[in-house]
Image (cartoon, rainbow, N blue to C red):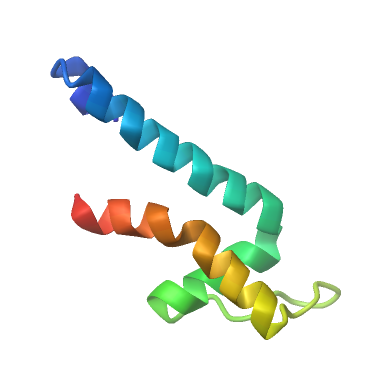
Length: 78
């Protein structure tokens, strides 16, 4: 983001920052459980948190993955 901003690509940097902010919000909402679930979905590691953290349901895991989808796509595009 900062590199694009410094290169004068302000609009592009703002779009990237918006994606990062939405990904950050997904991490905040899901906490450790959601972040680990998304890591498992997209990268094949993460698994479940230790007790007393709950295991996400299938629906929750899909929701966590959806919350990170745009951020993962951005990262892969760089």
